[in-house]
Every structure is written in C-alpha cells, then in structure tokens.
Length: 132
Image 1 (cartoon, rainbow, N blue to C red):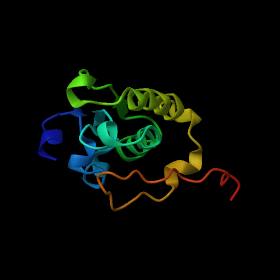
Image 2: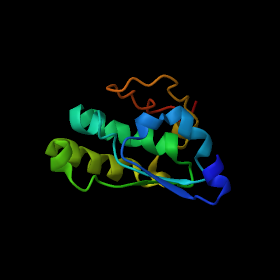
Image 3: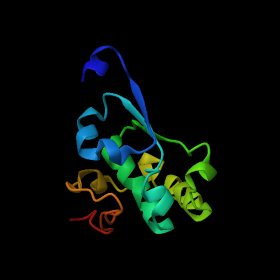
Image 4: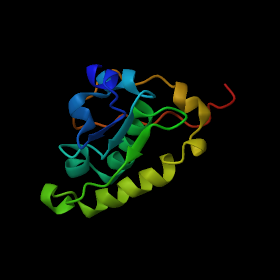
C-alpha cells in the first residue's frame, strides 16, 4: 500500500503466484499488473492446456473488466527452460482472453479460487451460464 501512496502505478511480475493472487487482488484497478505466466511452475512445468488456462486466471485476478493486466513473454525462455508448447499456449491464451470484450460477462462475477496450489491451474468458469 505504501508504494501506491507514493504514486506507483504499475508492477512487473515474473511469478505472480509467489505474491499470491489473493494478496494482489485488492490492488487490481488501482495499479497495472504486468506479468508472465508463473515462471517457477506453470510456464516451465505445466501442460500447454494449463498454461493457456492460467492466462484467464491472471486476467481475472489481476485485471478488471476494463483492463489493468498486461502480459509479456519472458525474454529468455531458454534460461528458464520454458517448453515451446507452453510459449505457444501462452499466446493462444492471450488470443482468447486478452481482449476483455470477448470474455463472457458472467465470468467476471464467477467465484474466484481462494486456495492456490503452485502446480495446479483451476478450471475455467463453465460456458453456457449467460441466461441463468
């Protein structure tokens, strides 16, 4: 909180899960989060499907309906031994969830996961609930 009081308006995170989505969530909409898929677990050790899903969870937990989350690719993927399949999956996730207006509106209100396990990516909200 002190840093935001001093005018900090953006923060870069290579491993957002280390800080914890729950701890960062109160600052969404107040500062811009700029991040990569967690380089210490999901990006380097997860499956392509988990990597793609994690993009949604980053957007949801660190951004708002109006924006606030920016993604970047880790500049030296060879240094962290990120599988090429996961790099491509990160791009697919950005293609799917990086344009906020394409995200189903009810997904923004869908309950958040409260307990995060480092090597597990929760499922996406279910499709087809728009009319409920």
